[in-house]
Amino acid sequence: MTAWRNEPRATGDGTRATAEPAPAPAPATEAVIRPAARLRGDIRLPGDKSISHRALLLAALAEGESRIEAAGDGADVRSTAGIVRRLGVRAERVCEDGRTVDYLVVSPGADSLDEPDGVLDCGNSGTSLRLTAGMLAGLPMYAVLDGDTSLRRRPVARIIEPLRSMGAVLSARRNDSLPPLTVVGRTPLRAIDVATSVPSAQVKSAILLAGLRADGRTTVRETVATRDHTERMLRARGVPVTRAVAGTSGSPGGVSWSVEGGVPVRAIDERVPGDVSAAAFWLVAATIHPDAELTIHDVGVNPTRRAVIDILRRMGARIEERTTRPDDGIGEPLADLVVTSSRLEAIELGPADVAAAIDEIPVLCLAATQAHGTTLIRGAGELRHKESDRIAGITAGLEALGARVEVEGDDLRITGPRILSGAITESHDDHRLAMTFAVAGLIARGETIVRQPDSASISYPGFFSELERVRA
Ligand code: S3P
Image 1 (cartoon, rainbow, N blue to C red):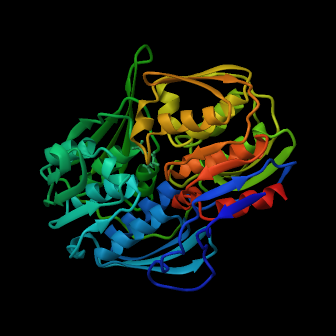
Image 2: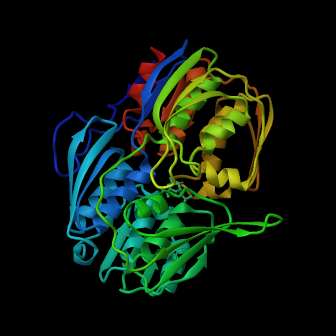
Image 3: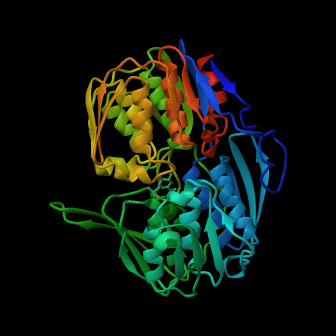
C-alpha cells in the first residue's frame, strides 16, 4: 500500500482544454510504500517522453496541421508544448486520460514563427532546452531558455559550441556553461561536420535540427550510438537523413548521421509509443519480486532505446516479447512485454551500455542489488549531469535500504543479493530516483519512505496509482 503525506498531484480528468491545465495542488512531501504480497496486472504506459518532445517541435516547424496521439502527459512534455505555443503555434490538448494526451498542432511553419516575447520556460526538462536551442539556432529571432533550479545546474556548453560553429550566437551563465541560455538565431546556418563531445542524443538532435536550416549537409558523428528518434521522425516528415557506420571491423568508430539543409519538414500525424523508460520500472519490479507477472502493452522497442530489456535478459530476467509493430527503420517498433519473477545474476556494463540505457541505470542498480554476485557499471559519469547527481542519489538511497554499493570514480559496483529493509530515501526531486525507490519499497521489509515522490509526474503521471493497482 502507498500512503501519501500531503496531497498527490492531480491527474487528468478527460476534459478538453487548449493550454496546459491549471497547476496541481501542493505536491506530496513523501510516499510510504509497504511490501507487496504479489504483483499482477496489465500496464499501459505514458507516451514516450523523447518522442513526444520531438513530435511537438517538428510539428512547430511544419506548416499546417499535425496530430500527435498518445503523447506523454508528464510535466516535461508540457514544458515543450508551452514553448511551441510561445512561438505562435496552436497546440491544443484534444483528449487526455491522465497518462497520455492527444495534441492537435497547427503551425504557420518555420519561417513564420513568432519571436517569443518572454523567457521560454523549460521547467525540469533538459530535452526541451537543448532541442529547442537547436531548432531556434536557425531561426532569425532572439530567445532566452530557462528552467527550474535543477535545469540551471545542467551543462549547456555541449550545445553552445557546435551551434556557434554553425553561426548562431549563444551565451549562457557562468562562462557559457549553465542556463539561462540565450540564442540569437541566423538563417541560413553554416553546415558542419562535427563529432559530439559526449554520447548524447540531445546534443546530436540539437545539431540535426539546426542542420535543417543550414546551407548544405550537416553531419554529426557519435562514437557510441544514442537514441535515433529525431532521425526517424525527420525521415517520416520528408527530410532525407543518412546514416553511415564509421571505422573498420577491427576498430569500430561509431555512427554518423547527415541531414540536408533547406528541405521543409512536412506536417504528419503520428501515434507515440509507450515509453520504454517508464516500462523499465515495471520490468525491474516484476523481475525482483518473488511472485510477479506483469504484461506491459505497446512498449516502444526501438533498437537504440531497448537496452534495458536486453540488459535485464543478460542478467537472467524472464521477459517475453510479442512484437505488435515490426521495425521499418522510419516508424517506431512496438511490442507487448510479459515479465515474471526471475533469478538474476550479476553482469558487467560498459560505457556503451550506459549510453544506451542512460535513463534506466538507476533502476538497473536496484535490480543489481538482487542479482547474485557483483555487478560492475563502468563509465557512468554522465549520470551526474541529469535531473540530479544520480550516482550520488542512487548510492545514498540504495545504501539506506541496506544494499552494498561502491563508487570509484565513474564506476559503480553493486553486490547482491541483499535483503532490503524499509528506510527514508531522498529522490532529490528526480523522477527516476523517486520511482526506483518506490519499486524498491515493493520488496523491502517494513516501510520505505520516498521523499518528494511527486517528481514522478515529470515523466510518469499516475505512476503511484499504477503501483497501487498492480499490487492489489
Ligand atoms: C533524451 C536523451 C538523453 C536522456 C533524456 C532524453 C532525448 O539525454 O537522458 O532523458 O530525448 O534525447 P542525453 O542524450 O543528453 O544523455
